[in-house]
Amino acid sequence: MKADRTLIERRIVFLVLALAVALPLIFPLGLRTKGTPLTKKAYDLVDQTPTGSVVILSFDYDPSTVTELQPMAQAILEHAWKKGHKVIATAMWPQGSQMADMAFENVQAKLGQKEYGRDYINLGYKVGGMVVIQGMGRNFKTVFPKDTSGLNYEDIPLLKTVKSLRDIKYVVSLSAGDPGLKDWVLTAHDKYGVSVAGGTTAVSAPGFLPYVNDQKQLYGLMGGLKAAAEYELLMEYEGPASLNMNPQSVAHVLILVLIAIGNIKAWRKRKAALKSGEVANG
Amino acid sequence: MAELMKVLGIWLGAYFTLSIFSFLYKDNPFYKLAEQIFVGLSAGYWLIYTIYNILVPNLFNLLFTDFAHNWLLLIPMLLGIMMLLRIIPSAQWLSRYPIALMVGTTAAIYMLLSFKSDFLAQIAATMVNPFKFSSPVDVVGTILLIVGVLCGVYFFYFSKKQEGVFAIPSKIGIWFLMVSFGASFGYTVMARISLLIGRLDFLLRDWLHIIK
Image 1: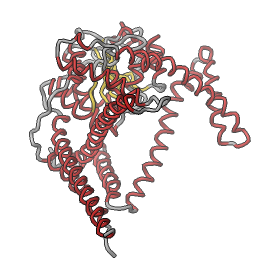
Image 2 (image 1 turned 180 degrees about the vertical axis):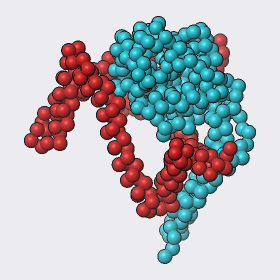
Image 3 (image 1 turned 60 degrees about the vertical axis):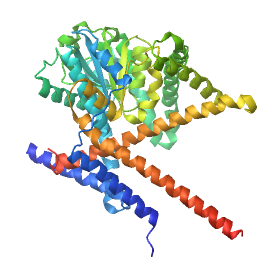
């Protein structure tokens, strides 16, 4: 029985793509990415916020999108801590709370120990999406009476000055879908006037571009791994996102070549079919 | 013990990653087993997560520790029970009330906010004087934004046949839509490759220790 040629070709494509990603991971090519205004705007929001401000990083994702969003979260957290901001971690996704713990741990390993309850706090996951944010806009304590370790709201020094969302200087939502960044834009910014920036998976980034507008509904937008690498570049270090841009770039070149080959093959097939049609018609 | 569990976890992760990837060659029992385990495990995980992280702290703890101040929570509890009655055919009709309440309140909340954010604010964001900017890039960008929005919206105007001069904005609108579809495709490729990078990074770093 003759093997299906399309199936074999498809398997070759999968294999070549796996190699195109694996080899640059093992042997980094040292490719550098260039910054874009969208990421710079998010960077500027963090950079221009005064020292001592209380801010929110919302971990609205789970381990499935950790490759794209965790480097972003860590770069922003590092930036916020370097600027002396006090960070509240919230999560609209159940496993976001663990993602926050991981980010706190990794950045502290780099910057040195921070004091829990004074420099940062993890309030954990709350079900409800937009309704939760609306609740935070009215009264923070009723939504998060305790943190993830069971500490009461009133016993946490960082939260002494926080009564509602209006006491927050900016929100950065790292978002893999719904609930996530859109809820923060619609509620925190458009209803309560808090500055919001966001980091999303590449898939959902185009849907958020219209919010980066003259009305500043979204201050800046980081879309996917490339934006994470850009933020690392702005922070002047080469982190996981920058390293992962090597296989990303090689894979993109390969995909462009494959699209070109596919189109040439389709064009030649159509031409051959036309020719055989002309021969058949005499 | 903790180290052993960590190693076991990594080996299990590697096994399931390779089992799922094996589908790229062809459908096989390893893939099927991994798929079934994933479905079962996810369902079990969410059930336990919901009970211990949503129902216990937000409902049961409050009712048992301070009933006098939290007795109103009996209403959502009752609605939740009514929702579960879908599994009993004779009482199925009762589940319609909590569903109706959820649909109604969700629609109301989103309608107000979406009208403000996705309609009014978006229109206001398009009403920009392009010539207020000093940079030529911003001027051209803003003109493209205005033309793109007008022509894109016009493409979806079907009350009059689009022919002759009236077809021109529609054709320009198609070009803008095509560019946006291309950008979306590019972003999607980037996202999918990122997922592959994540998995291969796990295999090469955590499992095989090829990357240090």
